[in-house]
Image 1: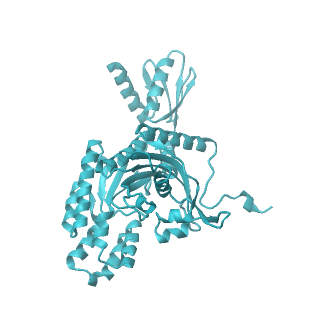
Image 2: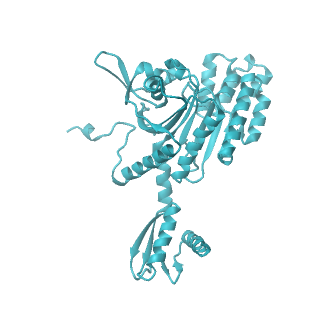
Image 3: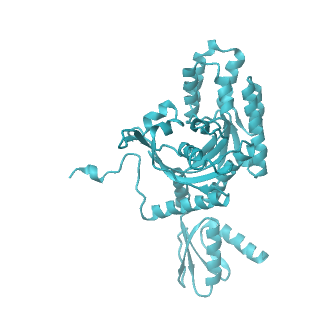
Length: 404
């Protein structure tokens, strides 16, 4: 028998036993967060007509599509992302629903990946789309929902990098389209070296101010000081407008209490060509790839015949699952021994640890003597363990109880 029958398609994976449980609980947590923010749920077909999906893709992205044919010979594709199918639904089935629309989904997407690539061809996008609202508060809400998910699944420290496609577009607009696209691809790959090399080849086409402004793009990062620097290089009105938009967004984010986790990145560029304004990516320290991304796409629904402002964001569920698994591996599972005498205090402490994101199992055993760093036992209101983290938690736990 050929071994091909035992192989998974490239870029896919199986989820079994505990892995499946972790994935299920992650999806449930995301579902609950989206619902508490008032978003309505929808699901779209796995297959879409190629003409539909093309409305949201760069021409270069079309090579990554999985294609097949229906009975009438029309080309079908496995959806490579969710925003374009949602735009189709918003202009057809939801055409008469009052605005703004708050839509949410958790669905799998597919795209071909190169051989021997470490990338996944199967990506679950958990996302929201806010349609019919052009205010910066709408963009801020999308970022706030993404932050709520990251906080709820306990990824720890995270950052939201925010840019604006109008800033990059304004400064690139006087270059030939082929050069613009090459520079955008360098920004997409975050390859500052190739970006500078490409730009130097075009130096004769540019004034000194234009050249210096373009050269500065990849390095304009940080807090509000990044916007002040961006204004220095905003030699086109559209670039100044982008800076205005970013300042208005920060005011709205500050109202959500998110100003501290946001950093501006004026060189941020995302792959789909439907983005028109604010862009963002979310990062955690343990992973070099974004766990969420999105932005404003005010002209996509116009391609379906219903001009509407729109903004949204998606979480990359598989990457998020990897981050959570790594944190669980670092934290491990703690084992608390308890006898009958100290049972109530031990159970209360175990629940306190769980509320702080730790996995804990309690074992009923009179003799808890064990030197393993992930074990502990309580007697006479004292914690016996060589684990410093557990000792710190126990001190905070006791202080909390005494303060009640």
